[in-house]
Length: 248
Image (cartoon, rainbow, N blue to C red; front, top):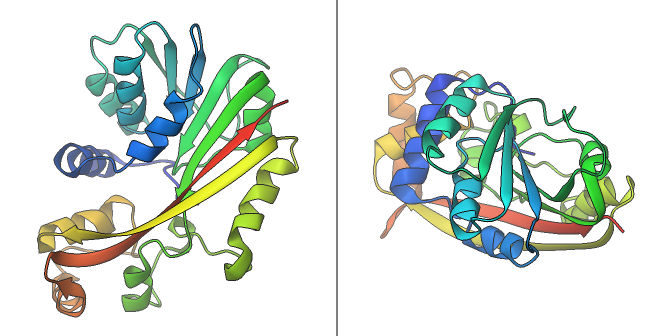
């Protein structure tokens, strides 16, 4: 599971820059969330990062309350800037593994590429409430793993115990704490990056490569680009899943 715990100011800047220049690639995710929102819903985004998801939701549903939580002070600063003027958004600095909320407080909890505790999410959801997770599939950024076999950051990739039955592994993590009606769908696509700078931003932002240094690794990145360049740019696989579960 991709982690955003302790993101630095540099990472927060790169994430915000990438989202504003390229987009968040979360249209399907947002659509799934919108499908369960009803009047007076209260939603929590665990690991909200730059708050781009709840910003989109809050603009669409002005009478609902959206709360964003992130462990990183740098992300919180970026989120505050991005949600200025939105009176239906509140931001809280806190840990996704120990949520600072009372039980059965939220109608919907969402998480995108951040650390969280399934049992904590279950605890703070109301009966009938929904949980959505946007997570990494095992093929995400596979080109990075191939090219940097000894340096890729394992914690920022999804490395299932059983690559064939990886969906079952994810479902079991949420079902064992009590969730029902669990559904999972996954999507693959090729993202194309236009320049060396964009590739280095991606590697540094997550981060994907241990001890990455833009100057020292410059020639290595050149070789990476030569290997994976396609007609539309430098191709990198993006693989994600959307999980939907309910507390009955």
